[in-house]
Length: 194
Image 1 (spheres, rainbow, N blue to C red):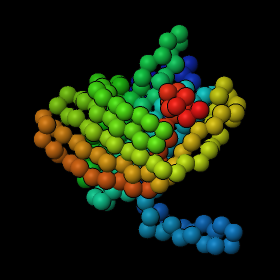
Image 2: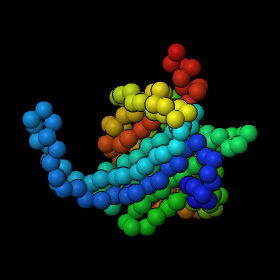
Image 3: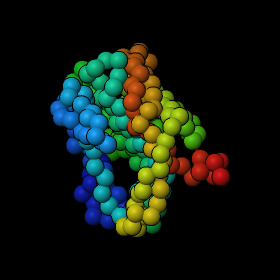
């Protein structure tokens, strides 16, 4: 969130604890053990009184290149008496971090959003990132509005994310991530579905 994290009146705060870490342990569900040992994990946190009214969030660290991890969040952020679009993207490839964010001058130059598919083009200086993601299955989860868990969001964990990273129009990196988390909460999409 950059310097926005220091403001005390934001409705929602977001923090990434770990982009990618190893897992060890077993979880037993209905008497059946599920062994997570050798897997990869991701941890983030959100806190505050309300989720943004519109946002797209996605994450995966299951790319063909095992050293890649990716998270993306674009949201309509209430700020005192007006709103602005906030952007936070972190792409880690072979231990190098590419960060695209509102606070470092990154701009969304193109986007297409439907209820199950998004496509973004983001520019920061000479770098351009193209992100395309889709999800066919979602479930409803409770989310906060004015401090109460009375709203519902739809999230899926079987999404696919395609990435292309360019430097001066030269392709630096291209990959596909699976087992991706994807949430699409946009007013136009909600109206389209109703």
